[in-house]
Amino acid sequence: MSVFASPRFLPNVMWADAASCAATGALQVAFTDALARLTGLPAPLLMGTGVFLLVYAAMAAFMASRATPPRMLIGLVVVGNFGWAVACISLLVSGIFPVTAVGVAWVLAQAVCVIVLAELQWTGLRRSRGGARPAASLTPAGRW
Image 1: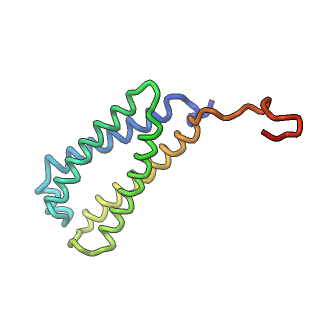
Image 2 (image 1 turned 180 degrees about the vertical axis):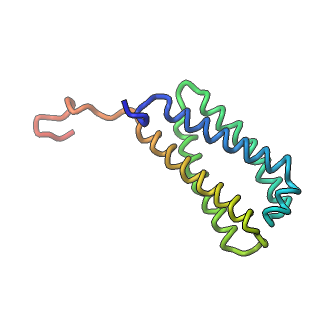
Image 3 (image 1 turned 90 degrees about the horizontal axis):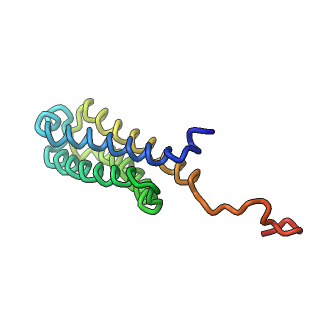
């Protein structure tokens, strides 16, 4: 059995998403001022996104803990993760803030992480999709 076909694949990816967001959010909330100095990002941005990440981590953990993952919510998570990556890149490209090399690494690490998670979540959603009709239900002419 492929790891992607495992019924635990999608919940495990959601647990990974929850853990990464909890860790990043906790760092940004606990060390806002230090991170602001190191990254060149404004403290209010770090605090705001840190709090958001902690709330999101709790919601992702809730989704991961369900016996049947909520497909529609996880679909929204996929879109949100790709959106987060676009926002990260936009922030760097815009030049609005005097982002340091550490700041570029911090933001790019988040972008790469959410792109990987979004792709794994999308793969998990596609692989766990139910309702495919078996070949035996084809008509004699080979059509549905």
